[in-house]
Each structure stands twice: as structure tokens, then as C-alpha cells.
Length: 189
Image 1 (cartoon, one colour):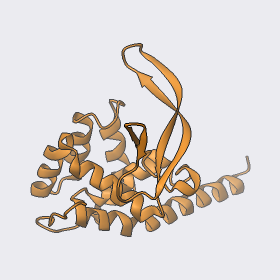
Image 2 (tube, helix red, strand yellow):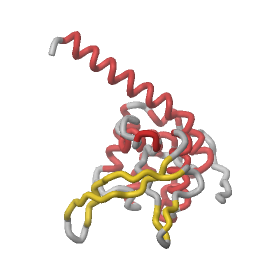
Image 3 (cartoon, helix red, strand yellow):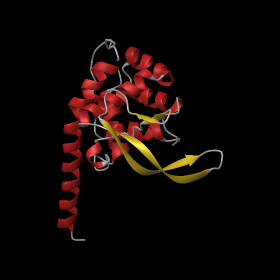
Image 4 (cartoon, one colour):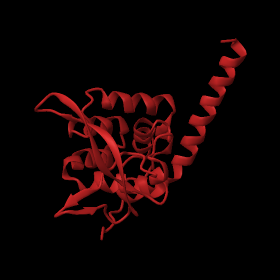
């Protein structure tokens, strides 16, 4: 490939990445204000989980792969999502040490902001992540928050925290975190 084409490809990729980050800043900061989840973490997870926004399940605007739950035969998608979409996904079955394909219900959102807020509410309302949130409220250390997510079992990838931290460092996502000493709690319906 000629050098001029490589330069154009790099510039296009850089522009796409920059555009995604710019689009994600306000929704991530709003989520941090309401939930305490660092904006840098939310943006890094959205980059990682949605491939820079290219794979957010089309009109579902689901940047984190948040699933809807089936309870007593009824699909529940929470108070923020507007519905759900069915998508084929791979799940790892630990007992079998095997990946299988299944069709799952994934939450569908009106926009990026709703997806980011629901992600933050999921972390805030799940006791597994309470120590990561409490630690971040005191220290404002997003790298420790990433490690806390991994320690709490957010992802099965043993390098998940390192992946998030490298994205946050490479794109200086820390600058988007709120500088508040404490985040005011919100009531959930």
C-alpha cells in the first residue's frame, strides 16, 4: 500500500476515534454525575465493547452488550431501555469449557446517553461493584476502578483491567472524569 494511502487510512481511523470520543464525553459525564462510575471507564468500555461505536447493535444503541432478562416468561429490560432486540451471541460455558452460540435478548435504547446511563446504573445497583465505586468516590483513581471491575467478575478476560487502562491512557480519557469529591445518590424507580 502506498504511503499516501496509509496516511489517509490512519487519518480516517484517528478522525473516527476522535469523533466517537467527542460523542461519548457528555453521556459518560452525565452517567458519572448520576451513578459515580468514572466517565473514563464508561468511554473505554464503550470503545472496547462496541468497537468504537461501530457495533452497538444497529438501532438498539447498546454500547455495552447489556442483556434483557426473562422473568416468569416475560422479557424485562429495565426502566431506561425502550425495548429489546434478539441477537445471536457466543457464550462461554465454564463447566464445559466451551463456547456456544445462542440467541439472546439485548436491551434497546433511544440513544447513546440512555445506554451509558443504564450501564452506570447496572454497576451502581449491583452489589458486586460496590467496593469499586466506594474506592473511586474516595480516591478518584479510574485505574483502580478498572481493576475493581475485573476483580468483581465484570469480564472473563484476565487482561480486562489492563485493556481499559491502556485505552484510558492512550486517549487521555481521565480528563473527562468529574472532579467532584462525592457523587450525590439518585433514586431509582
